Image (cartoon, rainbow, N blue to C red; front, side):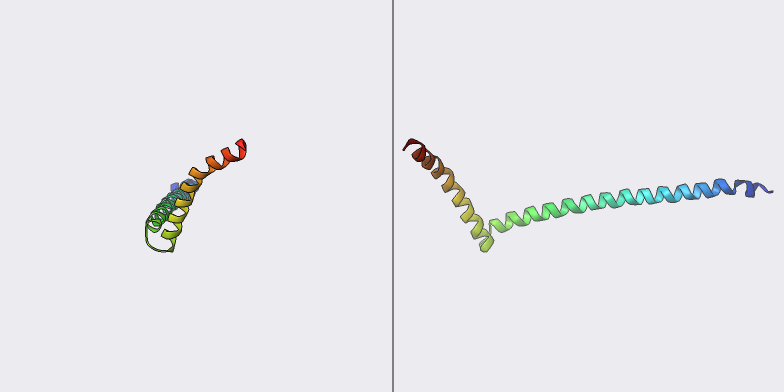
Amino acid sequence: MSVMENMQPDLDEQARQDAVYAAAMSSISAKQRDQERDGYAVMSAAMGWGEGSLGDGLFGKASRAAKLFMIFFACAAPVALMYVVML
């Protein structure tokens, strides 16, 4: 038996470990890319929402109407509650 034949199981094990290591590193890299992609998607949605709510389109008008309604409600609700409780 030659020296290479004696070392073959060690070489096979090293090749298996290299393959497992490469698969693990690939998995970690893919997970990091997915997290980065999700971050870009969130920022894109937030920026689109902000730009859309300040515009002159339908979404901008609806956003302004909702804002005015909430301001009115914040001013009118305490008065209405005091009226109901006091009278």
